[in-house]
Length: 447
View 1 (cartoon, one colour):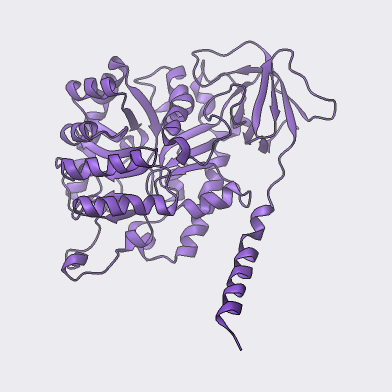
View 2 (tube, helix red, strand yellow):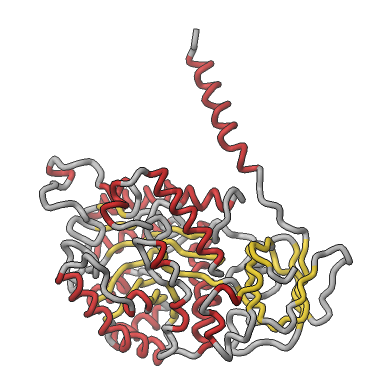
């Protein structure tokens, strides 16, 4: 006879069996010694002279021309190559790798399989870290962190929070909101891309739910969107009280809130509400840029997304919004540089692995506004500083990311060439002779 006690005992046994594979981790060498390398540390404007870099376990131990290790420690002779931090993409959607209708109707296990493939491809393009700004990717992130599958480090907000008729609302007009008898959750909510919340109470619940799921920070749609169905680019989404509710709740969790906003009015309302990072911000004015700098707000910027052709299937309204955002990009980036704003780098590609395969193009496309060193800093040290805002909610507490310094994670690229002098060497991962994350080389053409 199956009693309640034996049933619960069986569940606990099954749970133990389920988590057992987490102990089977990919082996990381005890140490690796890089010799004869020139270092770009993620924050400087130039490379060092020839030096050695000693990695022990997951971390960088020593950087010195005299750094050495025991004879049995593996050595990689850089031959004058550039040793630099692994790249970080500050704005990705790892879960979304299909067209909108395919994605919303696909089985979740198939979506997860595509996400795992994209994670490996991302790592092998040299991106050892990504910040996922909307999507149910936390289970995939766990599998990567447990060594079950290759991929980058992932900080994630889980579902982005939006209002009825806002950017996260892709329901047909024939579908009523839940409070008027509509379905309890939408297709995008089921995939945890977004969650619809109206009023302070629901925004608080939605924010807390993301932390219950394991989110590292919060993202809120606080302005109109290029690809939205119902929200014009010029509107402010959410009232000041709703915005402040999300910000204050994130602070209570000792992390931060990021805002999606393009127009100056929605950017400014997000800054005034206390958001620590603004995603996109293409149409900012000098007054708002000055306020962002005064408050130390990060600007999460994308270039490649706006320099590519308007996606097929966009409506006339969506195409017009894309053009508006593109037209504002030049002025915003010039303002950001002139005012000394904190600039992060991201791509924001969704919909296909072919589009995401152009991820590295983001670096070269920034050349009209920034020097090679500034672009490299944005993709490494700057993005690493933004990661630090997650504080104790970040899953990576042993070391810093985005920099080559003692005590930082050994997330390393060994580049055949000098990217500070010639950024074109970053155009293809073929020039990355070593791709290392956490002390483990996932690619090594020199050994």
